[in-house]
View 1: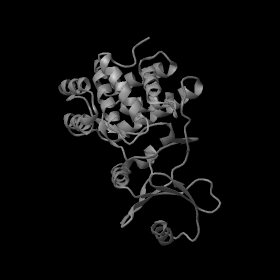
View 2 (view 1 turned 60 degrees about the vertical axis):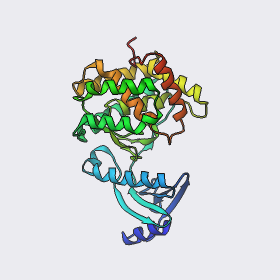
View 3 (view 1 turned 120 degrees about the vertical axis):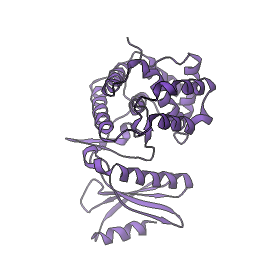
Length: 300
């Protein structure tokens, strides 16, 4: 389906280009101008129905956020088209390289957490919160209710009235080091198909857990890592607690609501059945329920 992308490039005045095709559930093209070492355009071809829905959703979200694209380092949608074989779209390339993952401590951990927290602050301030917080939180719950242990479902329903006056903010939904690109003086964020409105601490928790996660392990080991990041005593846990309390203060939210807001964030994460670490999160959720739903990031 690259002929659709090629037609766009010719129409935009391109006479030559280089392409790197990345295989996967769909196809991703990195499109370079000759001599460049970073892609100027990123193309995606989605074939399976779920991928097509995700691609259309990403295009819609990027258009919704386009007024803030320059300040947030977001790609712009350049072209989209349906065909008999699937859905094709092109977006502008963004500067920067992905951050490192699998970090528990050290200066690099603190530096990356600083970058993530600062970008989240800007994102949450620029993108308006949901008009109706109660509705937004109920939508998160509805999207994952079939995946939830009964104690989590009951606790979330009980917490909803307490959260009705709490802002449901813009959430990237897949905020981790590989979607956070940096270069001197610039931060970019990519992969926007999981955007929604939800807990102000959701993206922070997603980022922190991914920093400590280890890929290629079994689900039980993964669940242990999630638990250690959220309830342990590592520098990563301590730094995440500081950031979480700052986020709550910025939205004038009582620290007493950290537990319910984490519960909403966890429920949102359990609804992401497309991610490889989903089984680990379900094991973690069962353990969390057995423990009585404690508030994460306990003070040391």
